[in-house]
Image (cartoon, rainbow, N blue to C red; front, side, top):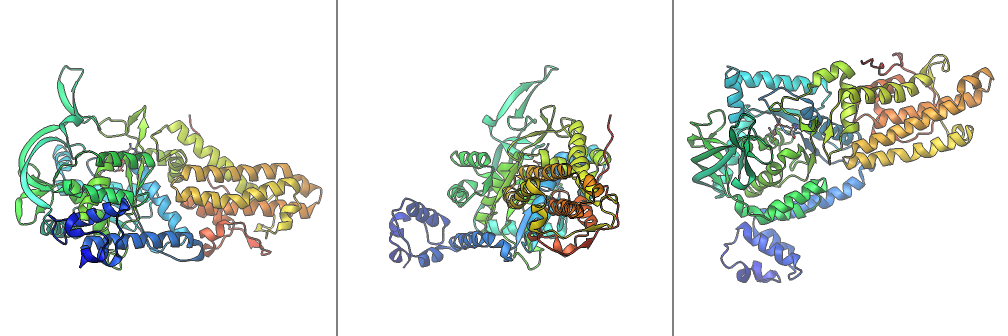
Length: 594
Ligand code: MSP
């Protein structure tokens, strides 16, 4: 008997709750947390399916902690990372590209450190009122409209070297099938009921907004309008029959998920979600009458209703997992990268849907701030969007990626400026790293066009400048590893650039052109070897941020492809001499700008 094996009496504590009901688990956990109960893991397993899932989740967590410590020893574990899927009501802007580059840098980093497989999904969110209206304003059939804009996103992501493994569109058959079967699971488990929904709806955000979260604003023309306080976008009053999801019943389980580890980063977003869960959680409307919303997936067995676009959209992550090989082995997602505007959908609705269906919620969410222009969020509605293509034309995709990762601090908003974009690309990519590489690969000081082996004596023979650079070179890879793991790409880049400055300073101090003139060949060779070794480490560390630039750098230094993983980011002693690549040494031509 469950309650006999446990030190707590479930019959007393859960007397109104039948066996198999998730609330028994909540009860059990509450008592365990309060230290009042000890219980046998066997009871825990027997309680219900969801209990087993939690047990499995904590096992997975424990093993992931162990294996991340062992990563450098080659133990591998799947890593499933996602971007949000982009609304196709408007063309891509650099806010979207930021989300994608952030996720891509992390995916590339995890590949380099040996996670396997790394699955990385992105795509487009194509249903809902917002898209229906955008298509009709453009006098296009919704499907034609979606094909076009989804194509624009795909092209922009490809140009920005986003290494996704699946590009999902919510209009695909595989996705519709998944949404249908998931709806049926929720329904069978008793989480869906028909009711009347009355309240405010914001079409621009595709979100229901509580009355106290709205304000009346007066526009300059004297007209009054009610808007969502969060997004400042207009809301409309809806009163209609639809299906509701019993969100209110999942509060305790959501709290439990939140307590299970650092599931939401940065901390202030975690705290925000915690505060939401301390307030009342009301049931969520998950369908709209198809007379109002026709562009979407019909409710199974009731075509008079269309499934709410956020339920449809969030399920994209599961569609991808179901279609990965082997089936679902990458579940749950390691991390969903999202902007702060869509936190509630990912931190409340999404885990609630999954818990209700008896599935594991995501392991973590990484929440980033917004790119602003003149202190306003970049958006089509505000009319202040910066197109990725205009940036690529100016500084190439490498320059854009570098700028976004160098300037983007996930915990805060960033201000976008074309002047700064050019300045940063020039100073770091063309001058800092570019100079380092062209100095040691130039024919003048390197007539044999080779990369010399490097040993402790190379550094010793360069005196104090050599030992200073050596200690920087020894420290940097571990510091960068930790910063990249913690999503502080900007800090990792700062460390790499400090190494670049160190190496350029070393080169300047050693004056190899004088050593050559004076015939001090040993010291000249040592100077060149040490500088090239530093450039190799820099190129290896920068791969997640600027992949094609790093590739050119490593190709130029003649680094074999199989020697580019994170293990090779450390200083390596070798006596082997390697021929340089034949390509020109200019990695990033300086940009002239008015
Ligand atoms: N379709 C939803 C997501 C559904 S995911 C199941 C959506 N789409 S969106 O196109 O509006 O936004 C996609 C991503 O771009 C979000 O993470 C959003 O935060 C991000 N950005 C949109 N504008 C942004 C900025 N100005 N700055 C940074 N990122 C921003 O929301």
